[in-house]
Structures are given as structure tokens and as C-alpha cells.
Length: 185
Image (cartoon, rainbow, N blue to C red; front, top):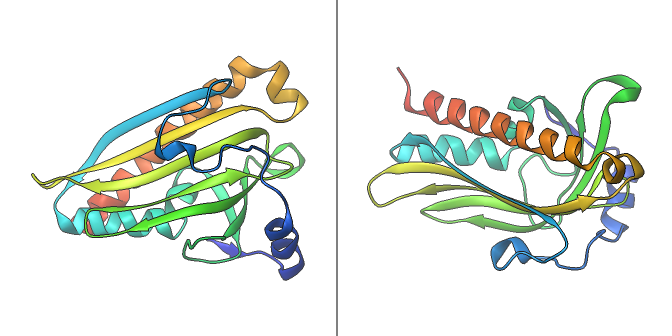
């Protein structure tokens, strides 16, 4: 279940600078000097699937469905929302602080972009969206650019990339499950 951040933690994250200068670049040409990731997968069909998938995305359900825990300043994503995501358990779990830098909610697209904050294992940006096509197909799209932000992700870059791809696959499964649940039996 999504938890709210303690007020002092939320304030500290809101005041922190993003750890990369190319804010918004997932919406255009991805910057050089980073690992790029593009993923698109059909997750359902029809408006009910789109609505359910979009809701899961905008309320952190995708992250939780992928096995991350989410402590957030806002239960529903909005511009400026901060989150402290966590992958793994206990002291070996990765702390993943982020800030939402863009939100899209319209008739055919739902999604958001977040950027990394100090303490995140990577530096960069990630965009998540659910799209309803003219033919009714519902797709999940992920666009990201990143590079190591901590000593262990710099030295272990191939392992970090493999981990990112594995989590992206989990995101697809979580969004697909939400879309299927939204269309009912």
C-alpha cells in the first residue's frame, strides 16, 4: 500500500535539486552520454482498460505491482510530487528518490515523468504513459535516459542496466494486470 512521506522528508525532497540538467528530455531527443531505454507494449484494449491502466499508473499502483514500495507526498501523481521508492528489503534495499516533473492526463494519454534526486542510484529521467489508440489498443510506453549516480551503479553499470530492464518488464506486467482487471471477467 502506498504510504505518505513524513512531512519533513517530503519537504527535504521537494527542496533538493534534480541530479541531471536535461529536464524534460524524455519528451524529445534523448541526451548523449546516457543509457537510453525505450519500451512499448500492448497491455489491453478499450476505454475501460485504458482508464484502469491509467489509474494504476497515476496512483503508484504500477510501481507497487512491480515490487517496489512507494512513500509519496501525494497519493495521486501531480506536478512536483516527490517519492521515495524502494526496491528490495531492509538495509540492502535501494532507496530511489524522485520528483515528478511532468504529468499528462487527457482523453488518449495518461502518464508522468520523474527525475532523479540525490541518493538515487542513477541520474536521469523516466517517462511512463498509457496510450489509447484509435483502434482501441491500449499501450504502455516507457522512455528513459540514465547513467550511474552512485559508485556501485557506475562500477556495476551492466548489472544496473539489467536491473532496469527487469523492473521495466515488471512495470509492463503490473500495468497489463491493471488493464485486465479494469475490463472485468
